[in-house]
Length: 291
Image 1 (tube, rainbow, N blue to C red):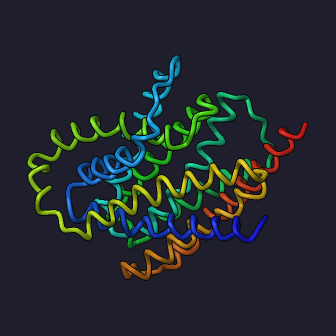
Image 2: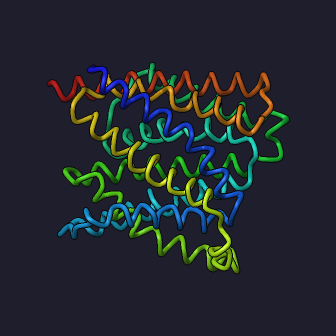
């Protein structure tokens, strides 16, 4: 891989890891559903120039927007608003990888052997260990909401596979266009008076929202799409494994989260499972593509 592309991977990992700070600060400063409504509003504004009607695909686009946009972001925001240990949430957030593989086996008849089955078991086992950490006992609801959000992300990945050849910013624009009214309505109904705080939101909160929208959503995911167009999956995918580790480190340092033996053990077991799935799945896809 060229040095400039390695630099791009490093930037993406850093951008994704800092996003845990942006999200936590945003949902602490305002109602969580309002926060993600504003985040997706920023995404929509940025992506407007690339928004195009997609004949014959708008039904799938709308469904993808509901699941991978509104549900994923809404549940994720609620989880971050209910839990202080965002390191544990960052670890649990990696379950989207095994969920995606399980869905691929069910719906696409993808064949997996014992190695990836072991990876799935390790990933879920590690997150289960976190639930027994004394520092997380009171935050299990947040942890479960994160798991639910990652499942929505995995279903979204399944739906994305049925939308090939669409420009990344067009997809993100439609995800935002579908999600904003749903999230805004949910905020209006479940968070009475939430929109009244809009004039009082300080500029630095808007900056964090913009960072999350443009950095994590557009630069991060758009950059990965750009790299996948130039290199095999087996080359690119393993390089993103630094993101969850960096997320945990950043969260511990910024929010002064206590590091316990259970959290370390659960995190290492989860990341080991994710690494196994990532490497083996990337290799399997490259082998299939080359056949």
